[in-house]
Length: 166
Ligand code: SME
View 1 (cartoon, rainbow, N blue to C red):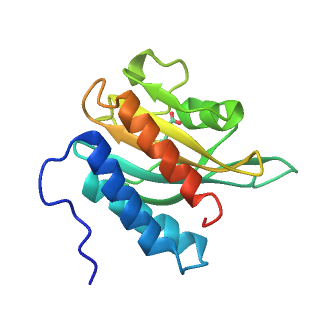
View 2 (cartoon, helix red, strand yellow):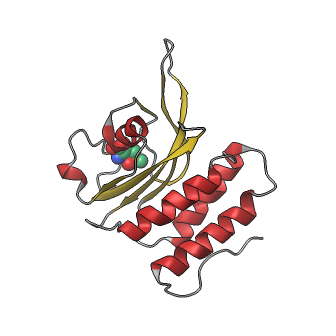
View 3 (cartoon, rainbow, N blue to C red):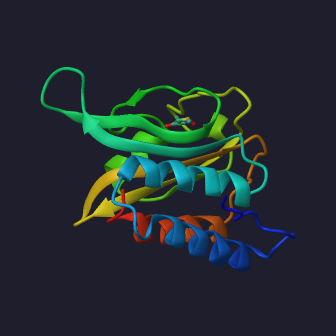
């Protein structure tokens, strides 16, 4: 049994330090990308308060044609939309721009894709390998403005650590 849940309310830097240590330990000796994404989705859900969705979209072939798009990966939360083209929604914009999207109010984000009507704010961080996007980490919250610059920095560090492990 793994018991990686934080035991007390921690300051963001301590929370992300502990989340990172748990994710690093759980993925260190495991080459299977799906297993690693699944455990990290569960860890984000355990460690980070006030979420209604936490997980991954991977870059994968489109159903038809030569293009690649974001395809749903391991997550915790309600069933979500499966395929997101580059440039569409918060996830597609993060992937296309290779930059973190921290959205205080999803209703004000043009083209936001609502997978869960309860979502009010969102943080999407691309996972890069050799400069190319291989996945994005997506967090949703039912609270407006839930995600701070500390959250963005913490998830960016996690994405960097996971780059060669997913
Ligand atoms: N809201 C995302 C879609 C994924 S769900 O939030 C899980 C977007 O706009 O890309």
